[in-house]
Amino acid sequence: MTLRILITNDDGIYAPGLAVMERIARTLSDDVWIVAPDFERSGAGRSVTVGEPVRVRQLDERRFSLVKGSPTDCVVVALQSLLRDHPPTLVLSGVNRGSNLADDLTYSGTVAGAMQATQSGVRGIAISQCFTRGQDIRWDTAEKHLPDVIRQIIAAPTAPGVFHNVNVPDVAPDEVRGVRAVRQGRWQELKIEVTERVDARDFPYAWLSFTHQVGAPDPDTDLGAALAGWVTVTPLGGDLTHHDSLGDLHGALS
Image 1 (cartoon, rainbow, N blue to C red):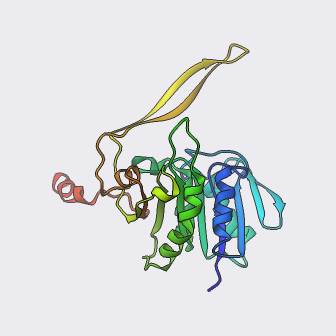
Image 2 (spheres, one colour):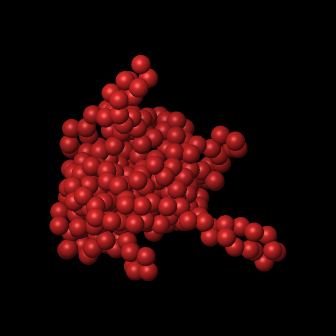
């Protein structure tokens, strides 16, 4: 089967990682389409724009940008409008500038793009490149390893409603230890910091930013394995139920 690939992201249509994702996709198929936000939407999660119109700008035959659109908007518009008559068989969301590991997943626009694809009946893969602040991003590591990783994922049996979250470690291409299927981990601490500032007109504003404390992560989680130099692949779904708590809750409510 010939793949028709849709690419989206949360870093915006001109992000370096989107160009990397396009080059990777073209090793898999000649039928590649791009629908991405017009500016960075990191942290957008599964937001959907319903209070104002979403304007579509066509940049070339197979490249579109959504003005003020989220990654979820991009996938919805692509599947229900732009590619409605010939839908994609695979949605690749990324390559994100920075990891999407552990508790970050519910905030991630990158993950949301893949989730929306899967809930619409199309295979979805979210892809992120880990990096260390103040250092160059190792896009070459993603570009070397991801074509084979994506091929392996789409060849593997996958239950309906399941999508995959991939993180490429912050190591040189030849230092990658391999690929591991792992569960989602937990940061020791995840906080959203508020930096208060005043602009040139004396109006107050704030910058919000994530801070993480790693701790001693389980090596069999996405966080522990990625920090140890593995490409991590985590199967995800839309069920947020904490199943182990149901029994106790049934007892308490009865």
